[in-house]
Length: 379
Ligand code: KIV
Ligand code: ZN
Image (tube, rainbow, N blue to C red):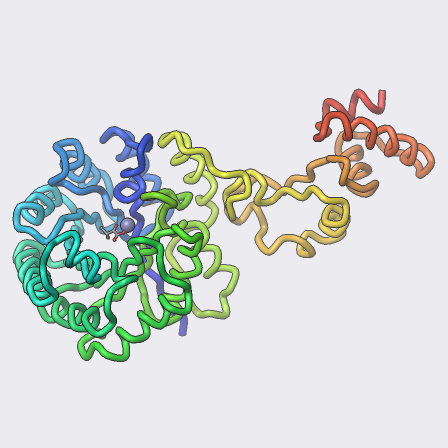
């Protein structure tokens, strides 16, 4: 039987923390409504105690969306939790996301505390939040570098205290996929009450492994993934929503599915990129400018014979208009003939040979030959 993977989108919280990506409340509401249309399950709307603006954004997003759960971040302290609960008052479904560092590095250097005291604070914060709202997610910050036994004890304690979801973040993007997957498996094998909560994955991309680590977590039992549009987020970013959704879609045999409408992936990616002034890298999987562009002669020839030869996703399935054949000096006759025919020009072989050799001269100079260049060439 297929199993649902819940999509927790943190574009408006972890993503929006990035310098230069800040949005006004009104802009955040626009993005939140698009995320709702996309089909995400949870929208992390902000960190209410951090500023009046963030507080207001959580209030307005709570009013604006009805389908997804609206989530607000807090540290494991009462003032933060109170602010989160207050900001979520009008949400149809609200969730408080509270937590504290779980690695010895954080416990020592950030909190100047001990494992026992951290455990007590985590339990107290979870109980306090549960008195204010039914849905409480606990994050064990820097779980990627935390001691496994302590992490399992922490997870067990916060579930006993009422956490409905427990987030195991690889905050610094430190883990390798096997390591991270083993961590999730350890939690499932060693936390007796693990079935009372959903285990969530939150990976950062410092080693370019966020998507791989997230999938590894899911393959080891986690059922919620924390992701952002275009993978934006602190430092090298978070796991990219579009990569996870399409990885599960392409590999249907895994028996895992999400509620996301893949056709909305490209339009939402463009919207977020424009609003946050954050260009999408050209070779970004799924939504980059080159994700469906074919430029070498061998690939173009194979693609024109059958798109499946070089594409595992139909671009229209993710909202991209069509695949692109980029004409360069690496292109072959087949690609040139195809493009000329699209422009309404048909040639026999000797004529095409002549045009092709002129095309190569032009491509060496201009690097990329566009339709206007081709018209000039045939004239
Ligand atoms: O990366 C992280 O650990 C976080 C937590 C606040 C969930 O963003
Ligand atoms: Zn994060």
